[in-house]
Length: 372
Image 1: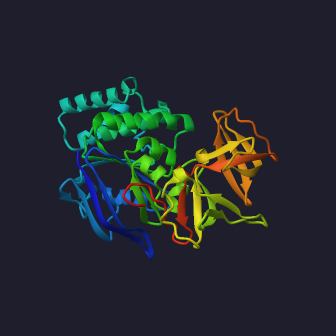
Image 2: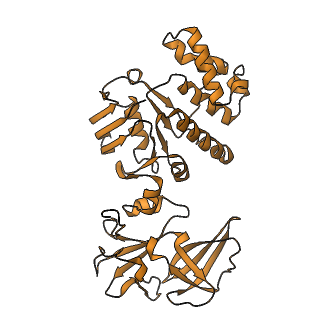
């Protein structure tokens, strides 16, 4: 096992900068997830760490060794690709043994490692089958087993679950996390699925446009987003955004489509959360659906809002409301009664809401964590 350190990494493809001066540290034994939309630079970064791409600038260390210019075979890493890439003419036993035979490992040790990997992944009964006789989930386990037997310093995984159906993805998420915890193996995992990232990673590195936007634990990136992109990318449904400004009394939500502005008084329990937000400038109020409180009758501090549409999801309902012409989503229990066209009353939980600068997108919220 080993740590991974990336310093000022730059990778260009012609005039396009795929990775732009990226700094990143992955601790020994940590499960790091690279998260972002397609084209954000996450897979390119992973390929640079593996040696499949050579950076234009910067430094990559695995453990104490600089590996920036080294071949993939010299880096002691194992790469699990998006496609399973299993040899169709080999049995599972032969596939697992292949990387060990390639480096002339003694047969007795090969037998032992293959048996250990098969037991860990619960594929002992599949050892004499060929890939054509395996399900998608079984093939993914074999692909992971082929990486495990090598006992590398670092596991690299590039969207390994994207080819599986929803049920298998849910099962394999738990299996990969359990496996990484049991082995204590340094793992870097690439995905565009924020649910995978939140449920699996010890840390999440969120990328966009080749730039690292934020890095932190799942709780940190969810509760303390540094900018509008992170706030909107993490969470399902995504965070509600309302254009507003701050005045002496509180916040004023800007109306659209001829709708009137809505004033929101700052609540005492919000403390100085919005103290950094300047008065008179264009801001964006961000609030997650679970932090929109609803009532059927008028209450102090609640605003009237028309129900636009109701989305019943079985375990919950998503209520879409109109306020100042904007659509706001609220998460409610499945038993909450609402119908399109009726008027409900809503209140934003200001202790969990956020303010962002409308131009830069940067957070203007004090989180009590030593700054923004």
